[in-house]
Amino acid sequence: MHRIPREHARKYAFDWRDEPLVRIQPGESVEIETYDASTGYFKTPDDKAIPGKRPGFDRTPPHANPIGGPVYVEGAQRGDVLVVAIEDITVDAYSWIAIGPRRGPLGESTRWPELSSDYTTKIFKHTPGKSGTTRDGTLHFNDKLSWPITPFIGTLGVAPDREVTTSLDGQGEWGGNLDVRDVAPGNTIYLPIHHAGALFYLGDVHASQGDTEFTGTAAETKATVRVKLDVIKNKKIPWMRIEKPGSIIAVHANRPMEVAVETATIHLMDWLITEHGFTPTDAYCLVSTCPDFRINIYQMCKIGKLSFVAGAEIPKRYLLT
Image 1: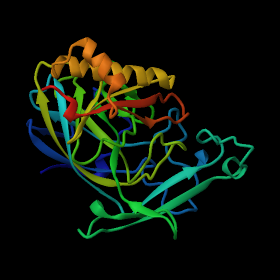
Image 2: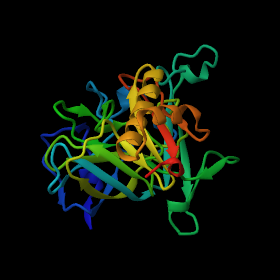
Image 3: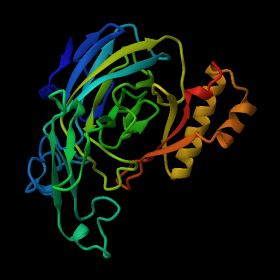
Image 4: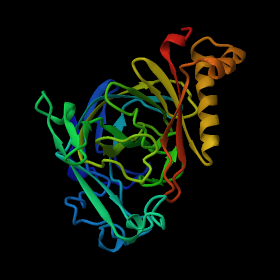
């Protein structure tokens, strides 16, 4: 098994100039041990999100949201598609969320001053499930509330075409910090490749999150992630795509939110037309009439340069091919 240990998973940019940490053949799996989004800073409720105390926050942009990679896939070339099958995510013994002044949409709230007058860090304990691991474990929000751990990869992608983009605020058709809760075990991600070898990175695992990641952080955690990487030759896609066992999702990030929603829907129509036998007319009408067509609002935090992330989803039972 190819493996990137945690101490080597501390990159803060998707950079085509990085030397690959591992090289694999198409169809092989790689295991990456990830840090949480704070690179291990948040351990107890006493660890506050005060920028002056956080390592890496003495620079702009801050060194936060580390990723592991790049992974070089032999034979992958510009103009191909990288296929990322998410095989397993095992999260750490705890996760955290941090709020406070000037963090998130209520970081300057006067209605609820406690949200903007002081820093708060909450630590969530994870307990294992029947497997003896956190794969089927429970997240304990407090003494009264808990729910199943539902991990996903918040940040993943390949090296962008020309620019070097940070893992904190980089987003594009190539991936990035998108916080899509459907980037989860059992699902497959498709990414357009811009450089030889694809140069794949991942990090920023969340133990759980609902739609939007409203505060700007969710249940942030360390994890061990296993993915299988493959290549589809000579294929172009406009943006990241997701295939679940029962549905397909086209993703887009932009501002304002309605642009992300409209573009994701157009990307889904393109998928239906180019690969599933729909005419443009039928695809257009389907997304407006199908009762099971859904728009997922994955990330909508008002933080820095982050765009809003939407996904247009339709069940596979409506596909023609």
